[in-house]
Image 1 (cartoon, rainbow, N blue to C red):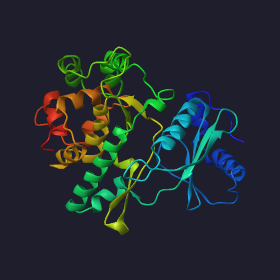
Image 2: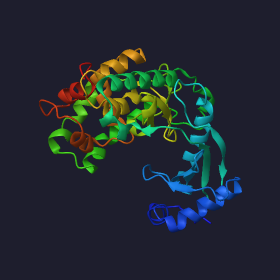
Image 3: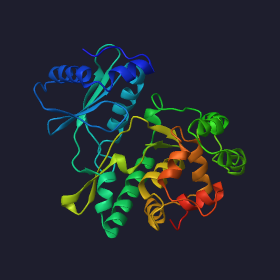
Image 4: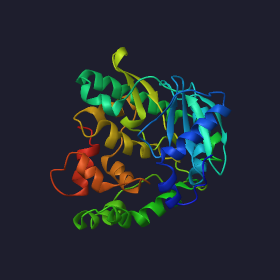
Length: 315
């Protein structure tokens, strides 16, 4: 019941259209033994995702993102029960029709940390940050070898080279001002990132979430704002664990004084602010103009000042 999606034009026409998506989701649920269960589509996220009753979540992947569906199912199965925070349990996953894939998973309890954050007292924010750091440390401690057949980038050094070569044009396309663009090549050349080994993997490579952010964390207001969920593993990668601190600094601690230092202490390791800003510029979803609008401005318009403002231990 869902049409083929083989291009961006197909995506824009099909994926946002509930008159097309909902019947397909309902048909798939019926085939999974959940006929008649209420379907509520989540407004966030790049993929169509539905709450199916109170216990399940259905995530759909059109043909152009079919590999993401395979990744999501494999990573969720790999991490299930192995982190100090709950993650969705996979009930079923596979191909649907016309190139679509699906993952039916358990529904986590709690409220999104991004929406709850303004209501959290400082002490609760600090505790949540500590719990989040412990969860990320546990994720990075898992052996990712069993996922190497589905997770990229494979050769970490080559990946960084590709990202570096496109860094200026990537930010130019996002609308970054020339005064910032001019600084990027010199800044990246001045930062030492972990060297790849002979097989292209970084030293102590880890399973990366890559979008570790408030939007993918849940808390329970009825349980003293304890962390109750981590989800959305479709962009997972294998690489240098410092790469995950881009999401931490930009979307969890967000330059709030003392929080990133607390996070790193609970995680068990600190990172150079300049290294983290370099990874910010090299990240596959990097959008520096947006970050500059959303986060505190540096005391001067330099990348060195920006690194300290967003990723310094005092923040």
